[in-house]
Length: 403
Image (cartoon, rainbow, N blue to C red; front, side, top):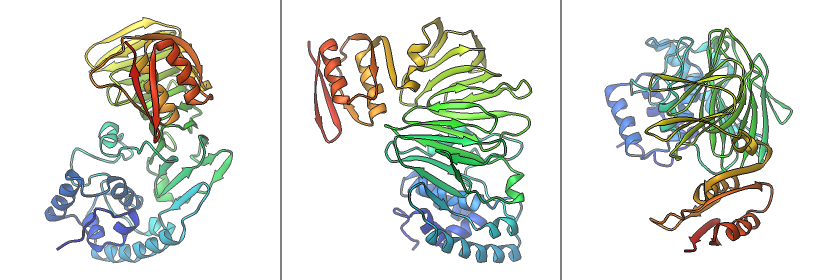
């Protein structure tokens, strides 16, 4: 009878012989075993993926591992386990998962994320990550700290805001503090995708290795390489970002969401693509972008808004400030349903808004809110305009519309 993996953390997986053996030399039995745990949710998926990332960090190629190599691997994994137990830090919490010695010696092939499902794959030098599938199975918790997950480590950043920068070599700094990175020649030859998670109630700025600047709104995930390859620049966004893309005609910049792809050369635009929202929006500030949906391209000009509601798409001319002012801590809304306004505030302030079931207010509002103000103060002002009452309990705001 095998272990109950329900409450396993990444370090627990690395201490489990069956897990390690089945990742290195998977059999039909082990593939079926882990797939059933994933499908039945009898495993902490984030911790399972994290453990796989540790092993993935010492991946080089997809060939059968010789027994001599396996013996070396077991020895290095023992070292890694001990390092992981002893190197947890506080403040900017840096989790060093991998012994450098293991990276330079062991050459194994492990497919990242759900190793047993052939439609999921981790990117190598010649292919991009399947972002939509990755995000489908790797959900970002809505609570906690801003978090960066890279190859072999995890960084948590305390506070409501973070300034994250990569230089052209992929070196990382957070809030002007350099983050020590352990690299090897073998790792440097591959494209490694990092993930930035910004929970509700937090915000971050992200400067990519090519000089592109992103403002990342609350409740957003961005997946990106530490250094872009020579032939392409590609990131994935679940949530909302404002982007100022560094021009590079040889390498167009591609932003992928779960529904849309936005292709640009050098431009400024805003994309809002929260999975829980019914609409996906792209607003162009300057330059030009192509928005692709189901193989069809739509070219946008400055001050145009592209909207997709799940069935049809449309383009209209708008005041772009309405869609971009959030990065300055200001929320502007024009003829917007009060429910949508309150939902935006719930993300920004990390609270839950509970609306009456099966009841629409039918109320449209226009105005501007300073998002640095106290939420209850904002809601009091809004309630006088939009005619609703609210009560607060345990970070939940219950809304009742007046008829």
